[in-house]
Image (cartoon, rainbow over all chains, first blue to last red):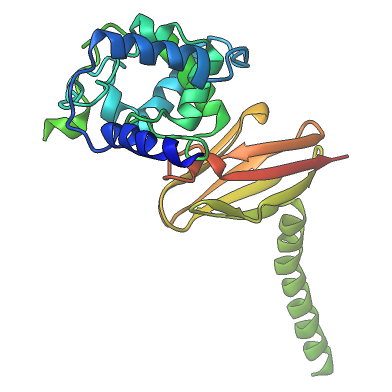
Length: 156
Length: 121
């Protein structure tokens, strides 16, 4: 990097670092969504080796329940999650078109690697491949919003 | 006198034999026990080898938190609570290499906790 490029780069990075949480505007949302869907989130063509069965769905629901519920709620739609709208970017509903338009391979990639900048952690090693693929099945068949109540952790 | 001593000795030997024989038979008919210790985030041993068609008792002991061991392909799942041992009798019906994973969420390395099972002819 040349010397004259350093200052603008540092300024640009500073603008993105440590800022107050705010709701992204329409341009930011559209831009970030396009970048994630088409550039940064990979694995678009990988197919889920597991098919939808009662057992795989139940396994996915169980694996999702290990800790995804803390942010995404029992229903994947942030029901009862007190900070869902106070993050930047806000937690998306996993039933939304924004999330559901990812391919299965991309959903697996996101769970494996997380997404930066956001609160989405990388789960590779914490969850097994089978567990993650089964979670993808659960995400494709989410229950109606609010139908499962709130995560227990927020009921105390 | 000698005759009585001989009879007593004979009875003692016979009694001993009666006690020993069933134990020996029982020992021979008991399946081999395989002890597996699970702790965050590994199994010890991490590789076990079994013979096809020979029943074994898998004993899973958890040293820290609850753990499990699941072989999806073999339809085998055993779980052990913290500090306890669970047993399951298992007869490998097919040869090959199978990877078992922890079936009870146990923390940050849960997904990398694996045990390799080799079944030979």
